[in-house]
Image (cartoon, rainbow, N blue to C red):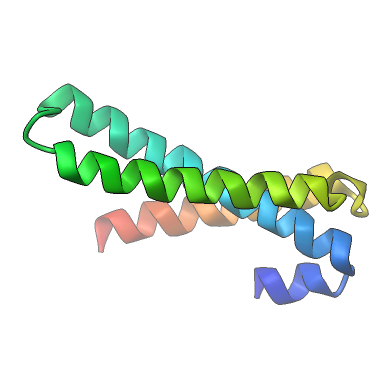
Length: 97
């Protein structure tokens, strides 16, 4: 719904959605990395490498969104904030289900 809704704003809206989602997911991956590093980095060495690669992929998508004028979308900060609230809610729920 978020992607389709932002796409109605055109390419810049879709890119704003990409930036918001990828930033939220990157932050979530960073949180997971910190937790595993605190717990036992050697034990989770392979998992950490995988999560870091996923995080780096998300950051690349984020940067592509910025390169394609995401910040020029109508009401960019409002749109970005709303999408990130939705992402955080989805992450919160997925961690508890």
